[in-house]
Each structure stands twice: as C-alpha cells, then as structure tokens.
Length: 414
Image (tube, rainbow, N blue to C red; front, top):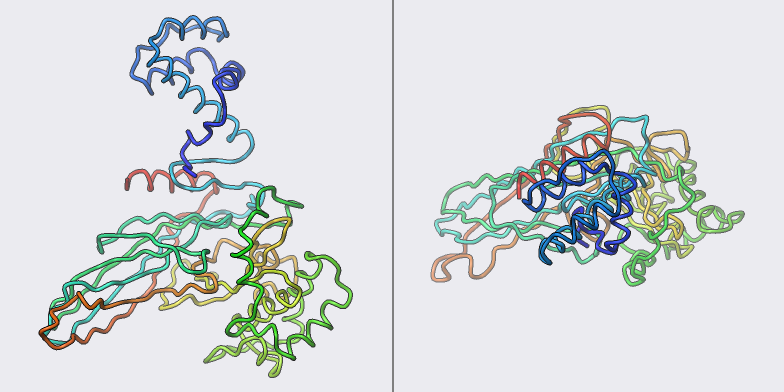
C-alpha cells in the first residue's frame, strides 16, 4: 500500500467536496488547488459553498477538472486521517496514537552499522556481498535509511516474513581493508497496548506466517517434558489467550534467577538450572505460549537503558512478541518487566530505549563471496569481516513532532 497522502483514493469526489465545505475556508481551498495544479488562485471569499465550487469546476477543462478531483480527495483523506489521530506521510507508515504513551517523550536515534571487510590475500575481490537487517516499522518505532556508502542498495525480505534486510556489494582490493557505513534514523515511541481493548485490522496476518511460531525451535523447546510440565502448572487456572499470555509473562520471574550467560541456555535448560538472562526469560515465555497454540517469537533489540549512546557488535537484549487475536503482535519483556504491569517495559509495553531489530528466524548480518566475485585463475581470496553498531540519541520530544522530522528526512533523501 502506498502510504502517501493520496493513498485514500477510495473517497469519491462528492465526499471530498463535503469535507472541504465543512472544514476549509474558500481561501484555503483556492490556495491548495493553485499550489498543486499551478492554476491561478480563485478570488478570495469569506465562505465556501457548493455552488461556488460547482461554478469554479464547470469553468475548467476536463483535464483541470480531473486535477481538482484529485486535490479534493487528498484534502478529504488528510482531514479524516488527522482527525482520527492517525498521521500518514510519504512511505513512512502511520502513527497509531492509541497505543503511544503521551506522558513519556519519544526519541530520535541515529543507528549506524560500521562495516569492516579485509582482504588479506593477493587476489582482488571485484564483488563482495554484505547484508544487514534493517530495523522494522512498528507501533513503537519508525525507521528510515539515511545514508549508505555501499551502493547499490537492494531491500529484500527475510525467510521469516517479519524482517527485511539491505544487500550491498563492494570491491575489496588485494591486501586492503574497506570500511563502510549504513545509517538509519529510528524514532522510538513508548507504547502500552493495555490502553486499548482491541485493535481492528490487526488479526489478519497470514496463517502460514503464524504457524512457524507455534512449533519448537532452537532454544524454544516447547515440546520438551520440562516445558510441558511447567505449562500444566502455569495455565491450570487460565482461560482465554489473553489470560494465558499474561500467566506466561509472569512465570519466568518467579522461577528464574537472573544471571548473565556466556552461551544461551534456552527454555528447557533454564527451567532445569533455574537461572538465565534476558534470552532465557524470553525463550521460556515464548515456549509456554506455544504449548497453548499462541504464536510467539523471540526478538533481538538494542537496549540503550539509561544511556544516550551505545556501541555493540550484536543486539544486547532479547524480548518477545506474542500474537493476540484482539491486538495482533505486541511486545513482551519478561526480563525487564519482572512479571509486573507498572513498569515502562513488560506485557504489551515497550519504552523509548529499545530499538527492535531482528525477529526469530532473521540474522543480524551476513556475507557472501560469490564465485564471480574474483578471478578464478588466481588463488581464492581470504576475506575477513566484522560489524559494529552505534546507537546515539539525537533528540527527544513529542512523537508527532519527531515523526514529522523523520518524514522530512525521508523526503530529503528521495
């Protein structure tokens, strides 16, 4: 769907005319038409009437009349969307103000992936492929690609159908190191889904996409005896998916003692050892949900915490997402939420410090040296690579104001 203002082509000329009559003065209508079509502005008047509009339109050619209809539809769509609390802009998805927490400021964060590729051989590499997962657009965040010195940029979809990645190609001369960067501007907005009982249109995800989040996966052993026994205890008094999802959220903090792990344990070992970090908290929640046929998945995020800047090689925090028929996918942070409902992060809540990056089934970055990327008559080149992520808060303010700034950034890059 095209997210531009003129996306509401479903509104006809009649409805558009009524909206203009109701909300706009005659001078505003004249200015809009004149600015958009290049025609001379109509003489100002204190009031706008259907008769005046009809007279104005009838005096135009058929081509000009078509242009007027388009402008009326745009004005009608903008007014209806604005008054309903939803904002649209060029290719940047709308803000759903129903779930945004107004008392906490939003943040505009500059997220940069610093890429290093080293060719330590005597063979030139004419084409090396580097792929980076892009931050997705969510209710809690909006993302725009700002700059990249790795042209060309190709946007593709991960196999999990829940993430996209950017693919770049670059040359790496023999015995040289190439440094590149990819920068995103990410708007972080605190959300709380308990503010609404349901969200229409969110329960239409494809069934095939949901099925993959119902079966066991690595570190999420929902079919293990340990997880099944825990599920029998956790859900013995729960009825309905919302009640069960809340019970699954509260359980990890009751049985797991937080301790940083060198390697992931997963849900089963976390139950056995009664310990784990954010990864185990998220995996256990997801595994419990899957035993009840509730789609859930693990999610990697960059968590700034109380810092304004962060440098890491991978996402430094794991949360989860659960799919509810009433709300669609919502965030869940069993670790920072600690099973409570009064924290900025928790069940259906995410603060302004977490940049969501990769859902389960999507890698953070990957590389490929294609067979056509070097001269086959020479020895195969030895290429090493790495990536460092920098996140820096550049501005705080209201979600609406920062959203407009993000849109301006997007439009200036087009």
